[in-house]
Image 1 (cartoon, rainbow, N blue to C red):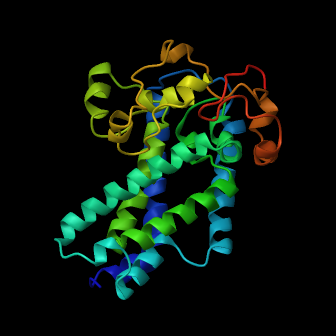
Image 2: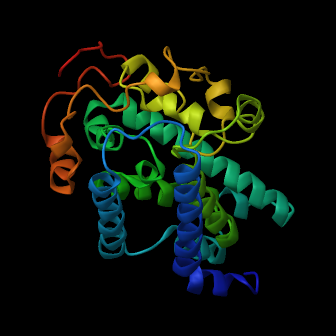
Image 3: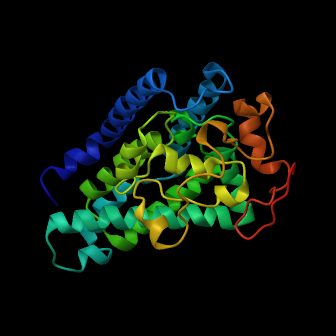
Length: 284
């Protein structure tokens, strides 16, 4: 194991928390200075619930799962688990391949949560936010977070990435999720260049349209290439971004933005025709 990796393992929570805090503050400031759209609901209502779910999920993962992804990567490296521990390649190349492969797995997982009706009910809470800003990027149901972490652990065991690769991936995923959910204004020229390398807010906002055929496009979180390669890319929504209806056709009352209502959303209502292959239904 690399000499620095024990330190990465020990300080991982602080590194991730520090990165989260810095990106969050930067994005919140950018939203205040140059917002893309006016917010339909007060920040104090949405942010208290959206950040509350972040705190709840963080505590839940520590209680429910005995190991973190970076902890498992240490074990995998020591015991020779995973594909990357079976081949002899440059550590730098292995790191890059691991980050790209993990991002691809998250893309596939995202599609799965849109394709399976039961999983969509869990993921729907993320889409039911009635505005689109930096806090939306961290708004996920606790059950989805546990399942998603399970997928990530399985991927780490199968791939055998280094602890540094896992930490880099985790920080990148959190940072890009806050960036591509940001209510921030970018020039068309800047957006056009950036979306060749990273998922931009305008690209991902299409995914948060209330129209099912737009919701089921642009599944990438960090890297934009998968959507283009697999035919799930949609450049722009059917209406201007300023007039785009954010959310789903259900849970459109302001009270649904409360934390208690959010936690119960998977167990209420119908799927609304949003799962991939389903029929669009209005008001369900």
